[in-house]
Each structure stands twice: as structure tokens, then as C-alpha cells.
Image 1: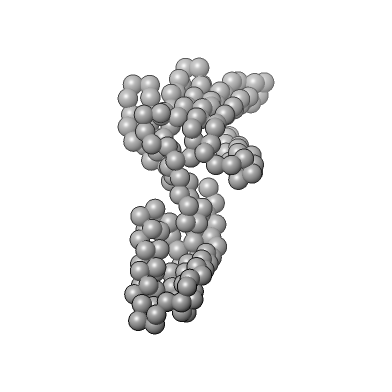
Image 2: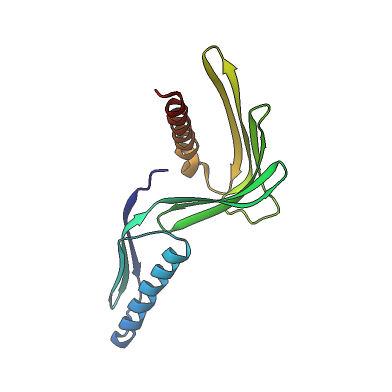
Length: 178
């Protein structure tokens, strides 16, 4: 996944804050933002906080979008994988059980319902690769029910599929020496 970055600017309007409370408020806001980004393993180019008597401002420069994949456990015929997707300060984790059958060239996955999943209520899919003339036929299907509103997910599924197919195409071409 390509990591993009952008600036995050958060401005909080307040009732008038006495001057003696402004320096600790700035420190707490800045330290809290740094801790949040670090805990979620999201890189940034720096975090600064500022204050006026009626405003607190947080500026995080170069906040990276991120994705993380980690194998949690392997058992006979099953691999449990943890995924984390982060866009700016928002981070979602979910867990998928992957079942591969090398003989039939089939990989299917499903959401591990026994774990806390931030992004999906349900998720499953499969890849199937079959020989086809002088090449291969790849079949891919995915379905999911997310916790996010539809307008936020409209492009995500398409973009994720496009990136996955591009990566698969590059891998196949590299192995074929094209």
C-alpha cells in the first residue's frame, strides 16, 4: 500500500481560558497527540500545539496513512492475520482467518468473530487461480459489512481491489520475466 501523508489541523474553540492554564493545556494536547500517534504506530513529521484564551490548536505535519499486516498464529490449514488500517489519526483493526488449499489453488478468508474487530461486522472472500490457455484465470470475490457509513466506504473497496489486482499482476509478470 502506498503511504500518503498530509497535515492534520484540529482547532478547538473554548470559553475563555485563564492565562495560567494555557501552557499546561498546550503540553497535554501535544503530548496526548504524540502518544496517540505513537500507540497506533502512525508516523508524522512533528506535532505542535498552540493556544489563545479562546482556542486550542493542534497541528500534526506529515501524518502518514498506514496499513499493517501481522500473522498472529498458524495452525493446520489456517493462518490468523491481524490487519490495521490507519488514515491520519483514525485507526481500525480487524482479524481474518485465512484458509489455503495449495492443491486446488484456493484461498478463502473470514472475519474472526472471537476477536474485537473495529472496522467490520462481517467480512469474507476468496481467491481462486486456474490455468487458462497460456496463462491463468484469477477469480476474486469479497463481501463485508462495515461499521462505517456507506459514503465513507464507497471508494475504499474499489481502490483496495484495484491495488490488489495491480500487485498480483506485477507479481505474475515478474515471475514470468515480462
